[in-house]
Length: 65
Image 1 (cartoon, rainbow, N blue to C red):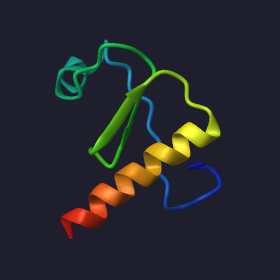
Image 2 (cartoon, rainbow, N blue to C red):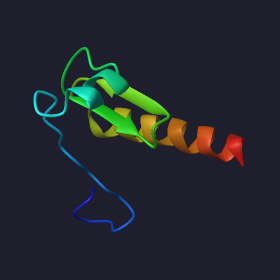
Image 3 (tube, one colour):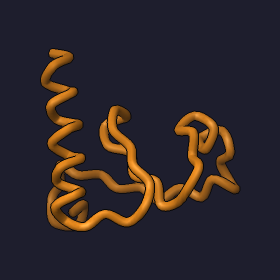
């Protein structure tokens, strides 16, 4: 998605090199996907699951405004 859309930023972080981020996000499994620091999930997600998580993050963002 990040390649196709300039509004999406994707980063891959090696927690062995940045253990403080692993602690901050309570990483217990990989891959860990974090969306807008409000929604996170572990494991590979299909397109529908990913879209559901994005919708959840957007709803949380909208309720904070």
